[in-house]
Length: 265
Image (spheres, one colour):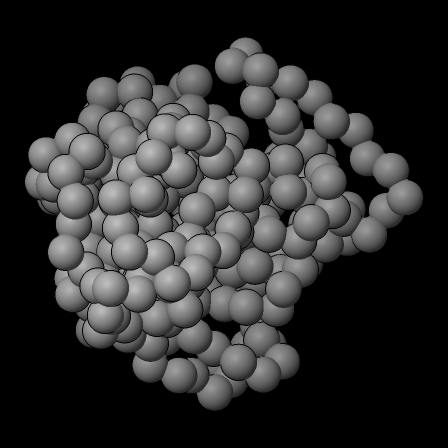
């Protein structure tokens, strides 16, 4: 894989998809449909998916592409592939809370190694560079000219005063029970894959997810966090979270700075 070209194309496609999403987000009303699993889908999901899929297939025709909106048609299984969630946080989008993201990632041998997370309503963009390190780009986020980049890195927290981030739409008692095992200074809620990015920038120290997710929900954030020195492990045995699983469903997991002393489930 040409990582420099991959970075350029993922960044561009994420920005273009963000424009398509925000055009619909700005409308007075938009249709919301239900998929077979009862999760919501909007015209923004579908428009972003079509745009990103076409772009990736044109640039990387020999790489398997997995997307949330086309998941039912994915019969192939591989450990190296591109994976896309064109609009992560659809509920946040529907309720106009702004915490939704465009996610594009490249998985190699079961591990997300490159990715981009773009939150168009918040104007925040995080991605991996060709060397695998992670940055946040600031400025106008122009499609043709890359703006200022800040290298991001996980925190070195005090385990007696941790900052926790948890799901905004899916927080439950099991999550609170696990968070209760730690000495927490403060906690915050965030939607979509932004939670990975808050750990990657050191704005949070740990993100436990005791709930259902799919690989397209997590791969891009996982790649960004790894590029910032963080880790993502299974909730049950603290082994690395791997990708390319049958059905693309994730177990519960923990995303964290390696300086955090993890507690057992």
